[in-house]
Image: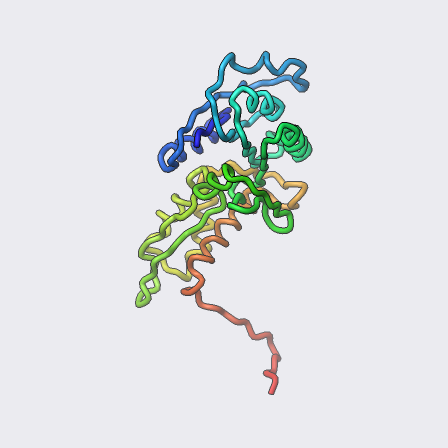
Length: 252
């Protein structure tokens, strides 16, 4: 698969470096303009003369207007699918994301807009009650490697410590691998809380502002996605704690 990544700043380049290190695909990049006018009357004025042929476009742009360039980029590259994550609504507002999906559907190009990026799986994107299903082989292939983190943990039963954590799907930014490295050797009982802290200390792209859809920060949503993935991997080894309210009497 040939992937063209649209990059504006350092966050996007972190994703690119992680993909080039771990992905089996050909990764090309185009560095977007850092400033665009509110209205793009002539999008071609802001595009290069040529772009490499691509199967999938991944937009990591940090400028709102880049989304309006994507239909032309698809035409120039012959791409069949687009992933345009929403890690900050200032870069890709939900309304513009919806328009982008509609624009591309008219030319039979699939588009997903995972919010946050690490909510992408092989069948759906977004979190909580906003999960949205999709079905496209190129996006599914991408999501096999990058998106919602997934782990396999090896635990020492005698000491209840984590001997190793295998990352079976990384966040595109590399955060899942970072968390796995930090948790190796840790006690199982502290792993979820520690994993959340390691995620928080990693330079995540998700916004710290309150998102109007989730009524929470995308950083917090992303952190919960990471903790849920760790919980799934460690579930057989986690001790369940039950709290008995004062005055509780067991049913007989």
